[in-house]
Amino acid sequence: MSRESQVPTAHAQKVSMNTVIEAQQLHKQFGAIHAVNGLDLRVEQGEIYGLLGPNGSGKTTLIRLITGLLRPTDGRITVLNHPMPNKAVLANIGYMTQASALYEDLTIRENVNFFATMCGRGNGQVDAVIELVDLSDRADSLVRTLSGGMKQRASLACALVHAPRLLLLDEPTVGVDPQLRAAFWDYFRRLADEGVTLVVSSHVMDEAERCDRLGFIRQGKLLAEGTAASLRQQSNTPTLEAAFLHFAT
Image 1: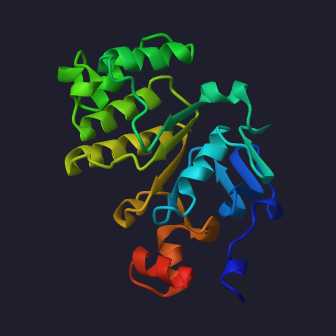
Image 2 (image 1 turned 180 degrees about the vertical axis):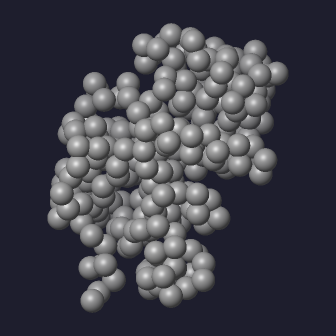
């Protein structure tokens, strides 16, 4: 059996009523670059799904296809049972980008309040999410005065404030200290237990153990997916890094 055949395709499985993301033979090309190449994916409600792969593997492009910020070159992707792009779905999605998407000349509080208002949720949760990311003492500081790690935390607050049903996190803990990183993951798990679906993009293997399922991505292809334990077992390797190298060669 080839390694590619070990990956069950989303369209070959029965899609449940709780399926939040489904991609079928998804392609995205930028000129000669095939950023996403025939990818099949299914993510269920309340699941933390980790996208693991090196920089340039197609993780961010896939996330942008999920949000509808990009249109597929070919194939199909649905989110919350709606083909994407679909503006009506966006109010149910929280997206923390890899690069800061904050307004530099607004304060943290003003940024978070802006995103809450844009999603029609008011400002009832603004102070709560700012406290969650440990920025209460800097809530009235201009974003341009913040360190890189603080901007990362403020971006997470903006992604959380409207209580999304689907949360997309692109490298969410870059520049965050270990104690706060652990607090973030504890919160992610609470969200999943409440029925929120999370897709987390990362190249940090030790964080992958916290995900319910993982997808190894390289050159726009899904090499293998499963729990951390099953991927190690399939590859007969002791670590996820070794498992990734096994499936990538």
